[in-house]
Image (cartoon, rainbow, N blue to C red; front, side):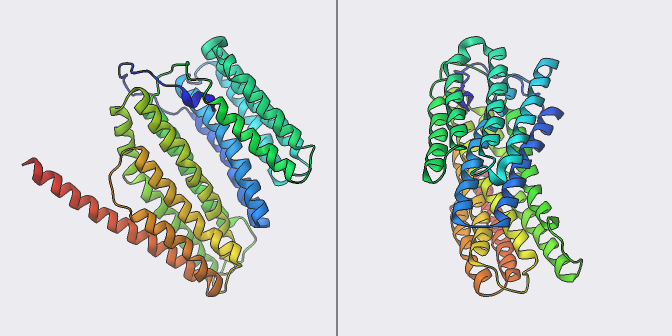
Length: 381
């Protein structure tokens, strides 16, 4: 993640023609398997402890996903050597994903070893790309993975402290790579993160068939509602925001472009992606309780998943300079409050409530956007 501090230092704009390679998309599919594993982990037993564990695991893995995404943006995997290294990185992420269910218990060391390989491959790719300038941050990455491996040998609160320390070391590492310079290829960068989000949204659809359910009217209705809900979340990001953010980033350079890349495509994506994990967990729980109430943890995880996603999109819009009113803050809060509906009434009503909130939000924002466009057009006359 140290490469997230890499800026282009006001270089002249370049032609934006690069597209995401099929190998990068393959890499993203493997990474999304970690989201699948985290969803299954929470669906099995949703508690505050499991929620904290899932969040720590997600932050650690998404941090290094970002490292790979930023690196391949600057150094495309178009040679055999780079492609083989990227495949090795995929294998390492797969090891980590397989170890997720017991990463804070029996498979903690296995997770740490997988993460060590993630760091090794990333470091090797960086050294090949920029030479030994990478030495300023690679040792800190190794220190971070050593802390995670150590956490696999301890029990109790010390394990959580070590995981938090590892994340802190990654954050510190990001300040050590400020002297490295790469051009951010905007079209590739935006497309890569958009594809990741799209595949992650597909995970919430997969949650519908993650269990053994009878194919009856209730199941079909729940499946359709899940699709509508996910489509609404797709609409909120992909109908306008991604293209406006791309245009804004193309118009920026130097530190301004870097700040948008960090704010919009890393920090904003944290609540968006983790919200999708909670959403998928909620959908899975709601399918068999469509006409009955949910446990409070399941109901509020469901609503909070949508709320977190919306909150993340507000951070994304701010970082990308997209104007708009604070409707999404209101919708985010209302989404969380639907947990009371799922707990005290029916999961189906909470489902419908979340869909209604998103549809109203989309319509209100579309109306505001048209009105704003009319004002801008009139002022230009």
